[in-house]
Length: 183
Image (cartoon, rainbow, N blue to C red):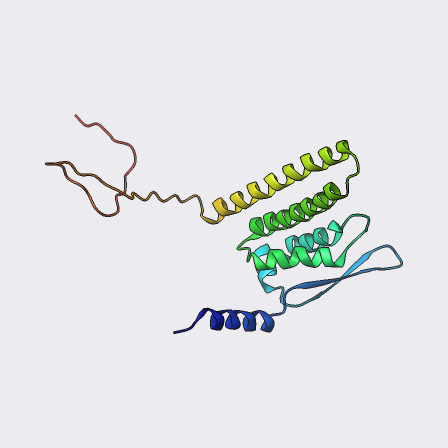
């Protein structure tokens, strides 16, 4: 029987063997941004569906940056790493996951701003924006959950009481559409 530590070691070995996607950012003298890719991009490329979407995702992740910076390689690699770790299945998921990573970055930036605020109005403004972003991230996560479940809902009955003379059906019950009257 494999214990939990063995499972963790196996997982860690798999993670070390796979190089996550990484982006190098380099501004050229002509003011264009050069992206150099390394690591395993297969999951993101496959999910994006075509070259235009994958190029757009990379370019958008590259310009997210962080406060006071034109671009930020660590922030860009966080976005691509997050999208990769969440294993998008199609372009819609890849786009939503990119938005979620950007929302998370903005949330933490506002948390820092809230902590550094010196006046009550600054604190209040940062706190309001922080709360909105935190709710947005939760809504995005719920949207992803619904999208991945393809709208399927499961109702599970935990307890059934059957009175004397009654009958209970045990098993899957499927309903067939609307009733139609005949005659």
